[in-house]
Image (cartoon, rainbow, N blue to C red):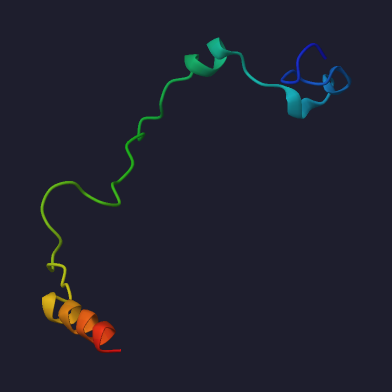
Length: 68
């Protein structure tokens, strides 16, 4: 082995170590239905707006820490 990234010469006969060349790999085109459905469609806002605790919960937390 001339470099650590090459295949071990003892394993060259193993059929699992047969990989297509770059030309063979890129020659194959994309399938006809290559577009995947989006799991998070773009645009628009969520159906229900996000609810936050608001300032009262923060004020109560800070006041509770100060009082302790």
